[in-house]
Length: 116
Image 1 (cartoon, rainbow, N blue to C red):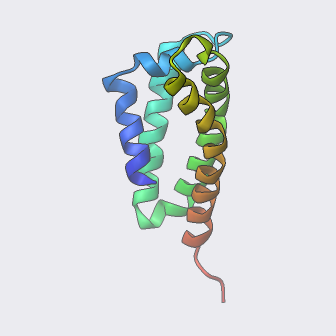
Image 2 (cartoon, rainbow, N blue to C red; image 1 turned 120 degrees about the horizontal axis):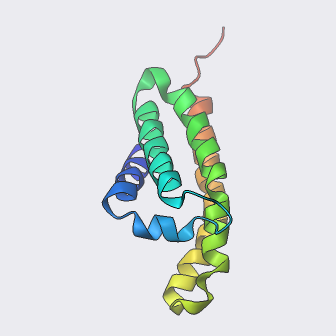
């Protein structure tokens, strides 16, 4: 999870154009939203990486994955003019988001101190 979030977060700044392109058209300030989501991914990666903050990092990561789901839906819906390969990836991302959310929640659950 840490690696995935770190790579994605960095890519928001290295190559922001693909991320800007998937922001739903109805939202203003697309570049700012991409930057904010990139920072959020990097923060979540850091929280998950540190044992003391891993539980909150898992919850924050799950929330972030839910929050960006509309962008994935937007990308899939607008992929008609793209290559078949791009369309396949865009549509496959939708169901793949759920195991990622479950993984983040599992990280949160497993990282909580056990009560005696």
